[in-house]
Image (cartoon, rainbow, N blue to C red; front, side, top):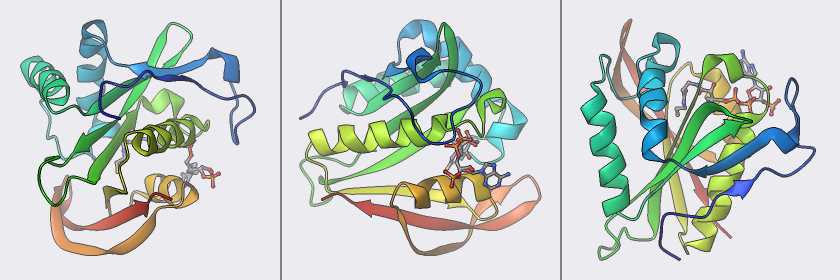
Length: 186
Ligand SMILES: CC(C)(COP(=O)(O)OP(=O)(O)OC[C@H]1O[C@@H](n2cnc3c(N)ncnc32)[C@H](O)[C@@H]1OP(=O)(O)O)[C@@H](O)C(=O)NCCC(=O)NCCS
């Protein structure tokens, strides 16, 4: 199925959830009202050090990305705890008319205030389910070498390492490798 996605109310009782109840969590499509908060997150140094977007990220760029995702039939979902925007997760699909059309790249970032509470796990699981509904076969993610939290999250969600893109990332401290992970959907 293609489309913007309909989002999920996070399931009860996931691993590692502390500080907020499962019933507080909703993962559903980003709206224009979310864009300022998401732009702020991509400019947060603790988040940005692991993203390919290099700060300062202009607000217009966030708006362009929002339009791009809609035009490409991708998915961009907000991760919400009550009224609070905790982060976002999404899929950037390959050209569906190409021989890569069964694949998509997955991205995720959270406000550091919400790290380590299981929200990342819930969001990735929700996006993997969405990818399955869309008939995608392969999800890819590139993780900066040393981003242990992210690696642990994706391994826990069934992704496997396929190798390294050596010196593929220009980080705050210089060049480093990117680890390519992928999940083949059943
Ligand atoms: C990566 C990110 C999305 C993870 O989200 P999160 O909500 O913290 O993830 P979770 O709470 O679900 O935990 C993920 C795993 O990391 C583990 N973890 C927690 N702190 C850790 C640490 N300091 N080092 C390594 N692993 C850690 C958790 O225990 C959990 O593993 P488990 O399920 O085996 O217990 C979040 O840290 C983030 O937004 N980082 C910045 C942007 C980023 O790196 N995005 C990914 C780019 S590929």
